[in-house]
Length: 238
Figure 1 (cartoon, rainbow, N blue to C red):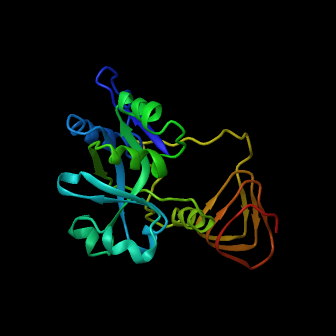
Figure 2: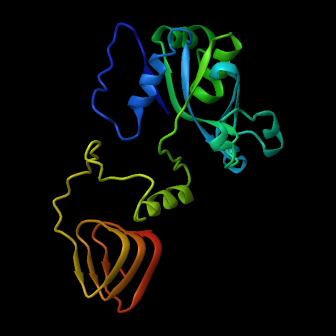
Figure 3: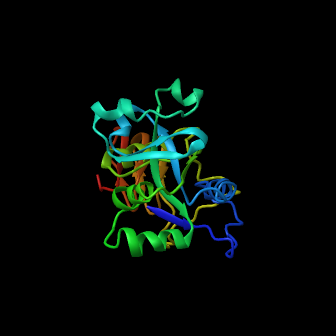
């Protein structure tokens, strides 16, 4: 969950482009905060995915009318929103909360100090309480790359997707650099191996291996002759 405060007395310092697209979200929200007390970043999902998210029901003008946390499949017919023709043709008829909330500070303070004093969860407690008291909440439809990696499978798939020739997200965008932890390890060494669509971390030794669509973790040693490594994400000595 990420909460961003929008306050007329505080200027945003997000002047640099952020790869995830926070600038786009904040800029869009600033255009609508005059008439709303909070905005929620949303993304269209299909029926299978909808049961794993908080789902919003959007009305006219993008105003949020209702919210439900991880609805059961049999309830989804009541939670269809207008997600746009392109998304609807893909079966993405539901608006999932991305866990990114943009709000006025005083609005949040009022909720936490008066309405839901013991609240610990935005989705389950604070948003329903805000809607119940009549706050005007706006849905901001996010149309860039975003993945929920709350399960092992989702984390696995998101990492493997980065090995594609044209991945859904690029770490090589010069306008939005991403930095990793400095480890002071030697460069990886490859001896007589065939490597295709792979990401190889620092400090590895790879010999006589056939690696196809894989993410090889730090200090991994792969040396079995003709070993095929396919669709994996690991950091193991072989």
